[in-house]
Image (cartoon, rainbow, N blue to C red; front, side, top):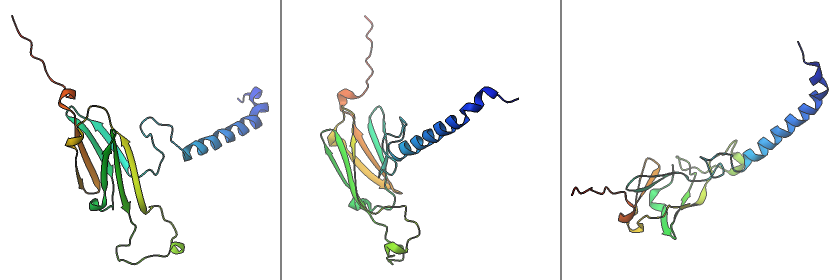
Amino acid sequence: MSAGWFEPYDAWYGDFNSLRQELDRLFDIGVPLSNIRSVPRGTFPAINMYETKDGVNVQALIPGVDPQKVQLNFENNTLTIKGERSTAQAEGAEIARERYHRRERFSGSFARVVSLPDGINPESITANCKDGVLNIKIAKREEQKPRQIPVKVS
């Protein structure tokens, strides 16, 4: 059984649906509508940042980047990760740009600035890189760490 009352609106609904699809595509190009991913797609390096009782950990995914060429700077409660990524071929042969059929990995300089939470100790920053993951650990100041207070019995 078909709903006859809807038939006059089919053309209007089709136009509305096309407009909705165009808007979805438009907003997909910019910042995704998500509270987990707060940067545009393609931002490099991708990071994960989480807090523990002892400090803050930042993981930057930097596959193919020489860790010796990565610079970390801390200033005004922000961490800056800078470096350069090349797409040099394993065999050492350069391919002319016009010969590529598809090139989805960019090469060149990158910089990522990350705001850090209050209460961290900038003197405690350590970093190491393994398997393309840069792990940065920043301890909390002692007064920011949770502590247990003993209850005295009188």
